[in-house]
Image 1: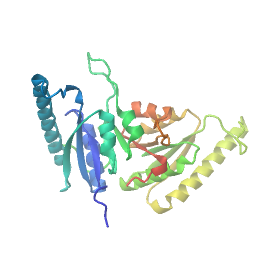
Image 2 (image 1 turned 180 degrees about the vertical axis):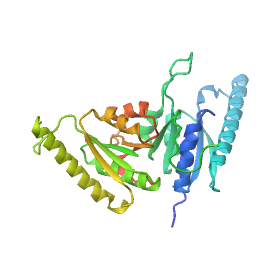
Image 3 (image 1 turned 60 degrees about the vertical axis):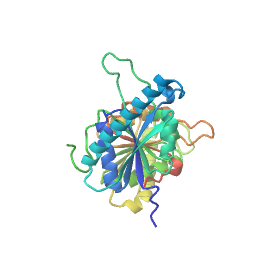
Image 4 (image 1 turned 45 degrees about the vertical axis):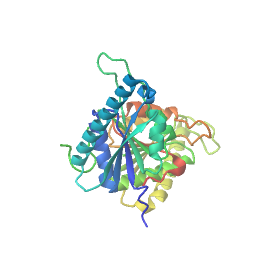
Length: 157
Length: 141
């Protein structure tokens, strides 16, 4: 009997600039014939106490933005997949690494993006990938954001 | 697809995981093993002609191990490379011609799960996706 709880991969989504991650995830989903769970982690930094109205409003706006992000990314991923495989989404609240590690429990694989260089005029960002890789319950596929190649499946639209 | 392995029991798990992945993705597998300092059977450093012989012996043993592990994945073409450059550099050079790289993280420490330096380098610079597996639970499904 198939254990459907394990039959999905988790994809960490930070921003909508995630084409390479989606391509790699689509390859994996096609070859595994499994579901995919998109996770966006919201830091609790802006979730102020309920009595602080301004912070509550900002938190709600950020949550709405995260909802829109996941809907848009899920739609792009579904276009890359030629099967009727389930794509689910989740907004996790907490620190990024522990949240993704928790999401990895029960998954076949975790897919995360790796940013290489600072964007022009911006300082390099600390990557959270090593933390996820070191502690994940499942194997982790680290995808460079510049990756273009396809190993299997359909070309990206 | 390239898999980087060290001379440790963890190699078995990583090769198995890489074979499984290569089979699933219909890819050829290149097993890269770095030997910066050739050793004889008594783990003493050897140089000159002895170094060449030690490397050939390592290559033969690794090919035997890979063949044994690949018995259930006979459709996967496998090539074994024993090289004498630092492991991170060797892996990156092989990765330049690969679609995927498979590497291992260190075994879970009780309190502080670790990511070794050999893995960190390729993770930061690898041009293709890198699959990181735990060698002791490396059943990539």
